[in-house]
Image (cartoon, rainbow, N blue to C red):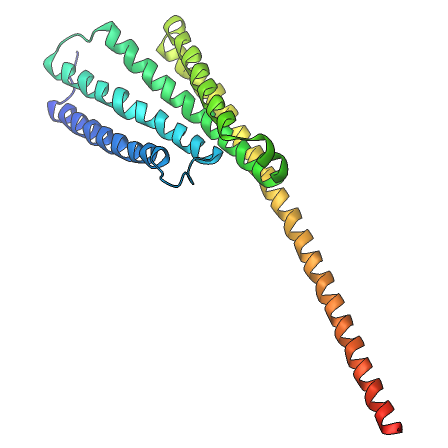
Length: 223
């Protein structure tokens, strides 16, 4: 016996999707505007460009995927059949935004690792134009990967995406942050040794100065 979902649940889903869409669009749009319209151009750096790219991916989900979810729910309430083109647009926008997000997170982790572990090399080679090209490459890769969904279907692609892209990103994040932690630990030890050496030299200088003063004092008494 078929059982249709409660109408109030569908309306609740529509309202929730609309609220999420408005919040997602507004929040990520502010991030993009802050980076683009920064009067002093202090935010136009490789790291903030990657943050803006992540915001753009979330903005895609908020501007396309979530409104389409509202449309699907409305069609469900009306008992109408959803157009196949609308289904493809929704799924493609969803997979594109998710793929771009996970790839950008991986690049962000690598960016922080290079900035901390190889700071001189990072300042010389990682430029703003290079980062923009990387972001464009991430979007092209996301579009090409998402287009395979048309051939494989939603369930198969979602299974592959969850088990490869997400898992690979998690591995990259764990490796990058482990290396960052190790690099910071080594640097902390080096700084501690440097301070300890400075303190020892300072103590030695103070003792030599005190010895010199005592010697002069004894010479004065002898005279």
